[in-house]
Image (cartoon, rainbow, N blue to C red; front, side):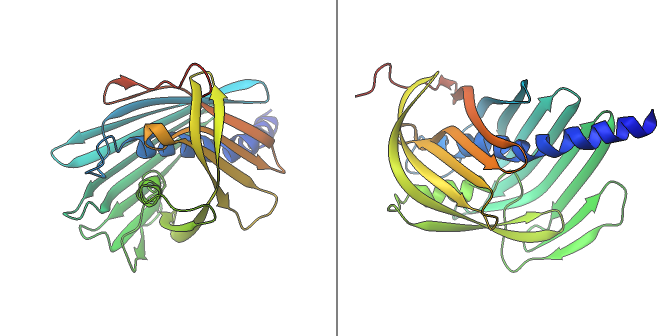
Length: 263
């Protein structure tokens, strides 16, 4: 019976974890692309965001909250589905040039009651970090520059999009993931009006350039809502195509809505 449970756990985990990352990305993009309500600052505003998708007929939801206290920000995210719960927390600040400086990142996953924890701790200047998984020894990560963590990296994309890059323009984001430093490249591909349950949105469409051609990630961002992420499509050979939508959101206590009709 124990062996059967382990097989179920692994079989269930694999496809679910493929879309949990893009669902998390949808929420992260939504926060930071929409956070710059005041053009004079790149600092994000407090928010609540709720997104969902469907896998194997099951609803998967993600909830995220951003709080600020005396210049220190905490971004918390919970992703939950039957038998799976993932909790993440990113703490960071901004320097005098409004550049993001990571402080710490925590990850906890529970699948069928089995837990996994990961922790990143950054030095004050952001140029060194430690990584620890469960109760294993800490690993020191040397950094050549300040980097983002698995939650707050999307802010760097938001800063790039505020410069209104042309179709075809690309942006490389450097972030720490587990004990490695990795790069992700995004490209502006087009503009498009799309309709969702929240209404019509005039969007910029960007795509992540995966090294694996079997994977695809496309994001629709609302121009009139400071690049709020409205929709994400993620496709790979393991779970097929997943469409992820924002259910509802509030930014600075203001509800996000689209137009009732396409112009």
